Length: 306
Image (cartoon, rainbow, N blue to C red; front, side):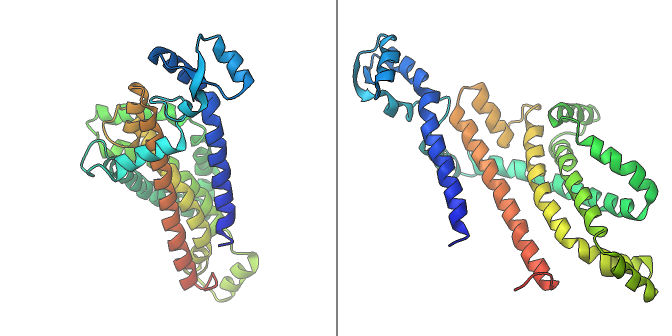
């Protein structure tokens, strides 16, 4: 319970700030909508009365502040509006429906997992090469770092267009973007992990006349496991972001990115916000899954107390 208290406190503070921010963000839109609908509203403070008397509104009930929380197309949706939209698109719609976030989530998740698998495999192989080859350390590592300075929003359309020109479309181009974002944390974490054994441990292996392969499997790889899992948790989140970003320039019809496009193009902010929160929940679930696997793995390796 004590471990949950800080989390709940932060969530409560964010929700409170969100609820308070809804009023100033939506008040002008609400006043304009009330004027078009012929409603008469009553601001809650003298400052609001002075502001909205200039709009020609008669100051009577209902409250203008109350109306900001139920605006159909708000600038900033209220928490209950986003929650209602998520309930409707996650639980009230069939998972095969194009309006179901479960359906769109699976489309994005499939590209995420494939890209994450590609990026993780590439990252581990590069890390092993960097640790065991000075030439790769001097050449590959700087390029890996430099690759992350390229804005993904600029790179994603180029990759998708180039792959499309040779007939590769669908899942794989999105997976390439996911792999691009996920491989770097794995490279850095694995290099740090493989180099984590200290000089005394390495000297002990030489005393036992252990081969380089034995040193890798018996010492370097086990020592790198905590670093690897830390990198994997970062990589899976980055991979999800990459899949969503890859859906935006293609005008995708399915996926979290597609739902965000629909919300922006058709003036439906609730659709966009619901997709954003669904993506965040998906990322949190994936990170939680890897955290659980990490605890079980380290416990079996004797590197974490039971």
